[in-house]
Length: 291
Image (tube, rainbow, N blue to C red):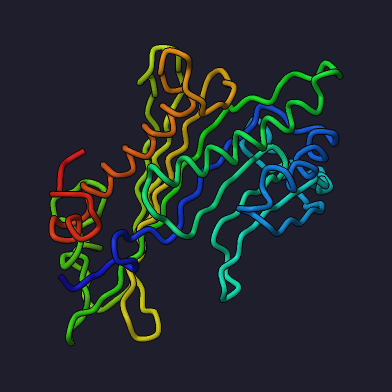
């Protein structure tokens, strides 16, 4: 095997899960999340930083498709908050971030989906509960999730003796997501992307659309070839839902948990459609299967 994963048991460089909320959190809700740090997050995410960030709106487009001649709107200042855990070298290990109406967890140390989901869901649960409780007397509607975005970046490095890396040394030839020019390229870097937008109705209580955006890059990294597979799955719901990861009294998973698990399984299926069997075995994903 010429390409090897960056980790001993998996190839995951980073996992991110974002919840796009159905409205902007109020000042009171953001303040409540900040105040919850000491009780709910200090042990896992000890560093906290707050501050404003700016959103730069895109100038309007007329019905005919031409850009508006009106000046671009002024950037809007939004409250931001970040809680972070660092490793001994000063690099980020885990991060919880609120920017506007997007709540995101980034994990740069992946130990296995079961453990990772317990960790992620606990942080998201705590964050949303702290913000919900802050405005329960004001009549503000509880924050709900409109979009789920699941992203995994896998990284592999070339450890062959001499010669040049080609995608055929790593990716399966027979997959619809990769153009033949990329599969057969020798000695050069390349970028390939593939995207789909399909209806989503896996669960009877959910309707929406699923955007699958795959990006693959082969490039030279200080004299060594590096292959990156960046897969983003965005589930857009017709109706927002309340996020909870808790199990019901009858032992049923919450809807949010089932949706996230489904996105994660879809990502694994896509990786299986790209990666050769020996590499799949090396990263604990079994024999190659078609999605």
